[in-house]
Length: 228
Image 1: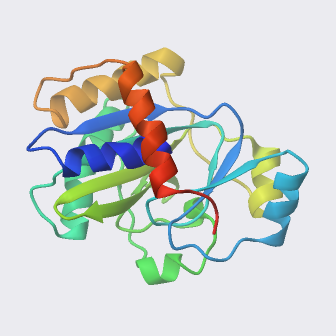
Image 2: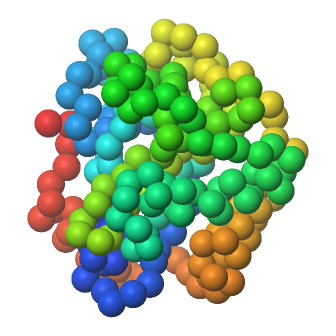
């Protein structure tokens, strides 16, 4: 997630613009929220035996298992600095993408203080999360603010590995209906929704340049990382 931290720093020092990244993980990875201090002993055991990697997110929230999902990172300047209004603005493109798949999403109703009692991000849906009409959570999101600039992280749950999910969270994954789009078709749907409903009709897609990779490596060394 070094790239995501760098994205926020780039936006914070720029006059305008925004950055969006969609990515998957090469290995099952459990990311912990910025302020999540409790690390379950069996998470460390699963990490020690090589079943999962462990990382610390720059954004808040609770533990997310990155497996059978798509992660998004959005660096933007919302029109409103009000937290819930910013979530609404930053999540509209996701709602439009899933409405286009025939699976509309709304925001959860649980208070953040209640959700904080659970270590698993997908165990409950707050006003920051997108859920189906039956209450099952499809997308969990969390934020990190730097002045008027916002980094919003989210996990778009697709088909999590049930056995691993149970070993990590000691409960079943959310019972989600399969999506009509998969793989590249789903990612195209997400990018098109971002272009229209997030980027005002213009989305410049490109890989990171070599000098940007070097800048990210330097930035990560300066910032430091880890679970501490």
